[in-house]
Amino acid sequence: MQYNSEIQNSFYRAKLKGAKFFSIGKSFLGRDILCCHIGSMQGKQILVHGAIHAREYITTLLINRQIEYLLAKQKRGNLDLQVGGIYFIPMVNPDGVDIVFNGAENINCKLIKERVNKILEKSNKQLFKANANLVDINVNFDAKWGEGKHNKTVEGTENYIGAFCESENETKVLKTFTQKIKPSATVSYHSKGEVIYYKFKSDSLTLKEARSLAKLASAVTGYKIVSQGSSSGGFKDYCMEKLSIPSLTIEVGRDDLTHPLSKKDLPHILQQNLKLPLRILEKVLSL
Image (cartoon, rainbow, N blue to C red; front, side, top):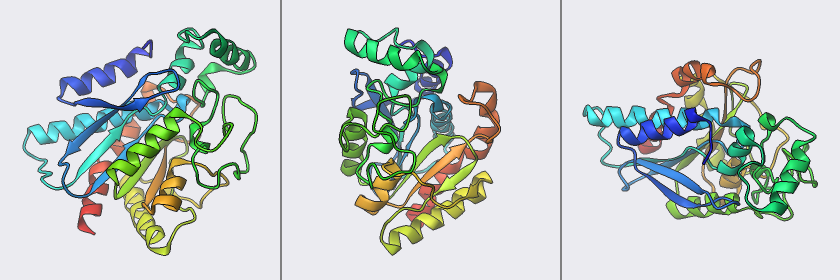
């Protein structure tokens, strides 16, 4: 995979620290969607993922550093998770991230390559959010699919809902894995804005628990909790509505920054978010 060297290095560093990545499934172009688990497989679990939107790969760097942080605590004997654990998926959309850096260069299928190039001719590849099938994965889930204010029914760099609900490999992989592990909470990392979303149609208990997690996340990060926007069909939305899992969408990086956020923006984002997964797991375990 010809990703930016910083992304490659972040996975390599995490592996050197002892992270064991495993594949939970394949992307549209057949790349592995990698996951890492920290803690015990027993007891409550949480799920943290990033880079469901291609240009938001800063969240991959963040999550890999969160993994390193927890592994270092574990090595020093400062992390004793005998019950409960965290599943990290640093990059849900590996094909899209590759397109941000390399355009259609690494796409072997002529037809797909032509489709992607046609879209890129009209747009800046660095702003690309979709997968290699030109579907925005985070509007493809079965949660008021196609009802979002900015949803599109024509393929492109963002907001295209897909030919049908949950049409994409990446959507199916994340959905199936979530159903399998049955997490007690999920965190979806996006960029940008330094805000936290938690609301979506769900039962009152799930909404109450999600609000509690949002308040904790706000206290840790300093981010503002905002009302649910006009989007639908997202992973958080699916978890809340269909699985009754309290879930957050967290937008990292100041709103005045330019997409895609760069490595120089990472230190401040790390300062705000490094300890958040562990704090959320601790909160979930206390309930």
